[in-house]
Image (cartoon, rainbow, N blue to C red; front, side):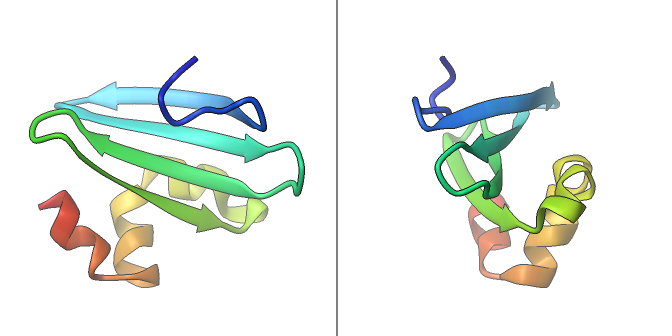
Length: 78
């Protein structure tokens, strides 16, 4: 089970490119969707709670969503 998945969260999709891992997670208990982003080096990460209707957009463009939702998250990603 990936580090970002838990018994109550199911990983729906995962991709990795250029040292960045992105996971699309669904919470069984409340139906919420989270996009988890992790830089493999340095070891830094952030998560975005997203509208289910925008889940795939956020999965494929997490930094654009982070900039729109909370620009301070990009400080972690830099």
